[in-house]
Image (cartoon, rainbow, N blue to C red; front, side, top):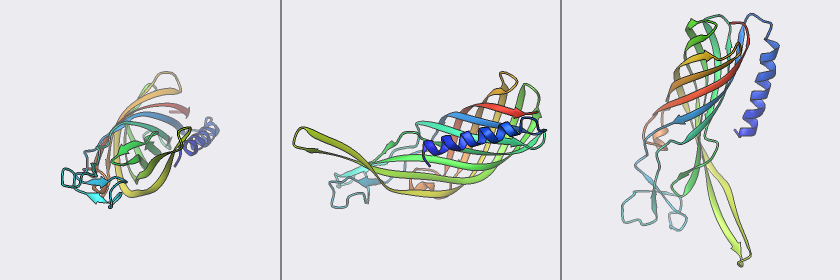
Length: 222
């Protein structure tokens, strides 16, 4: 899903949250910044000059067109919303993605995680809340190929075309400390863990740790 679509979703959540301002529940909207990391897959991909273009290959072999695969890291942007139905219990949604494509052998890739969670807050005061969450969702690795060409020496262009994606089920758990800077504005450092079966098709492990800092606004009562 594009950043524009996530922005529209965040705007809709904001309007929904405003309607809950006078209710007994608490609704939060969140914007997050951080990173996720995974080791590199040991395989490789042949570049476009190979007779096996974009096929799998073994790095450091006799195939000089074979390019190694990267590890997962880099900047992630997050969007989310939490609805606390009770003082200590609630539900939430998170989506974290790389806003820019990363190099993936001869291709470019973008990683995204999204999940729906149950939330338990064993500590919940006016100024701070400890939140434990767990749920399920999906992980998506999308791929694109960038090609440059020129007509003569005066007109050159670069195009990026999607070439496919890989989607997987995931299990998510996380822990965060939500600190209120004002009555409604908060910051929440959070550590997450994604378990994504078959992610080893793209990276080195099915286990993906993640560290985020969320900024948010809370509607309603706590």
